[in-house]
Amino acid sequence: MRINLPVTDIERLVPEGEVLVSRTNLKGVITYCNRPFCEISGYSEGELLGAPHNLIRHPDVPAEVFADCWKSIQSGKPWNRVIKNRCKNGDYYWVEANISPWIADSEMVGYVSLRYKPMDAQVAAAEHCYQALRAGIPAAETIVKSSLDFIVESQQRLAEKIMALEKYRDSSEEELRIGSDIMMRISNMNSTLDSLVRHKISPAFYYSGDMILAARTPGDVLHILLADAVGHGLTAAMNVLPLSQAFYAMTKKGFGIARIVEELNQKIHKFMPVDRFVSATLISVNLRNQAIEVWNGGNPAPVLIGADGDILRKWPSSNLPLGILGKRDFSSGTEAFQYKQDCQLFLFSDGLPEAESPYGVQFGTERIDVFLEHAPPQGRFDELLDGLERHLCGQPAHDDISLAMISMPVAESSDELMHRGSPKALDSDWRLAISLGADELKYVEVIPLLTQVIAQIHATRDHHSALLLILSELFNNALDHGVLHLDSAIKQGADGFEQFLLLREERLRALDTGNIDIEIEKVVIEDMYGVKIRVADSGKGFDYAAIQGGGQVEQYGRGIALVKGLAYKLEFAQRGSEAIAYYVCK
Image (cartoon, rainbow, N blue to C red; front, side, top):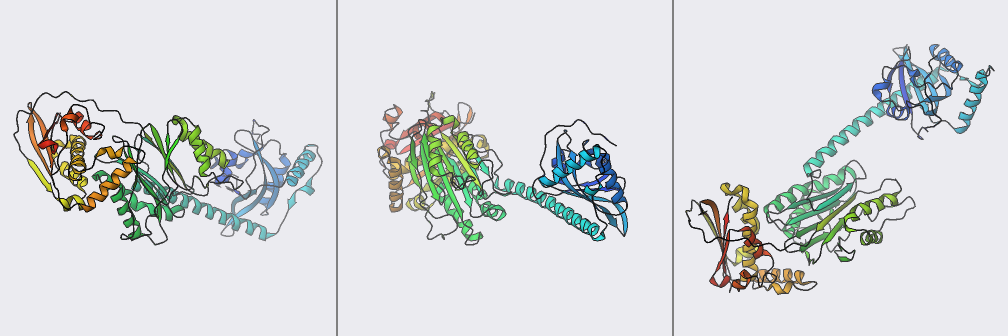
């Protein structure tokens, strides 16, 4: 008799409802084993297949028990017994074993064993039987025998069904794994998000109906999308798929979030059934201007919290989720806020506040606020997740949970570069010019248009980001202060930035006169390849001498200071309504 050592006194329990299945040939060599058998025994499938079944025999079980088993099954009869088995590491587990001959073409070709979790009384009886056998007392009456052929047939049919179901489950899990990986790749959710963004998505099923995306515009504005599709699993995951490509493509072209959310809504409204809507939060963070824009449709309110733990702002949903309204009724209006200190923005799907403990208590927004207010800035994200884990007590959440944190440091003032005189040569190989009147300024998305223009200049491809920053800052300065006559002093105050944007939108809608001219051309600057960017507007200009002297940088934002930092030289003319920047492609 094989003796397997060492052994411990640690018991493992067979999970309720699970069936341990194995099949052997006539010599007792394992030819099939299912996953529950591998998990509780501690052996891998590779270790069990081809090994004798007595590999799991526990030395506490008397030899008479196994002799009785072989006598029954070799004679074609089923055998039932409560058995103590040994794990690979020496632990033990009890099973109610049902072993029957395996019949193929009316011939016995092996044996099949189905093992379940026994009742406590059965284990106690088996231990009493073992003691009696070791003491030399016959205990045949405790060995249950049956010669009914239908038991053999039933055992075999049950084993066949279990193995077929497990094969189907394994195949389904593999398909789910592959499908989930493909959908992750399509949506680009596995990619590393921005360095300022931390995120966590915990799906309730294989597929997550939640999505978190982040990307920067050519002007270095950070866009973040958190989408939460109705429902769970595959159908919910399919709902959010159309969003990722549009989000990344439009952000790359420099579109604002208002235009992006219009396109996202159209895609869901067009391609998805009316009841498959998507709650979404779309956020724009302009780190240079310390400005946040938020569009929230159906998600919990994002929370902006300062370094000292004060909640600075929340943005409750003021819109319906994506896909419910058509283009005519849909509102893409955003809410704006300008922050004055280092802060963090938290956004999350409803799965976080609605996560229930084993006692049916929801995590709740109040609990979220408490964690954010009392945790140190560097530990807020992790402490919030740890608090959620403690709340769930190890049980899975009933809904997908998504959480993102955007760190927003206060921008430092740009140091002015030393300028060494004017370009000495203007040998132009190419020149681009565009003039935008009132209608174009009102209805054309100019920044994406400029992005495409810059992208076509092959010789400057390594400098596209810097050139676009210069061009977009000069254009925005010309539009806001030249054509629309907006005063940056409006931005001062708690809601100043939001009031500035509302007034900007109002004046832009009412615009009937005014124009902006843009010229981009190649120049040679001190024997180096360079680009000249000229932006002129029809406005009255401004006191550019004061800005160049550092007197009004705050009033006119950080745009001009940024351009001066990037450009080789920045000049103003026509009372400030014309700006010319020279950039060296080093």
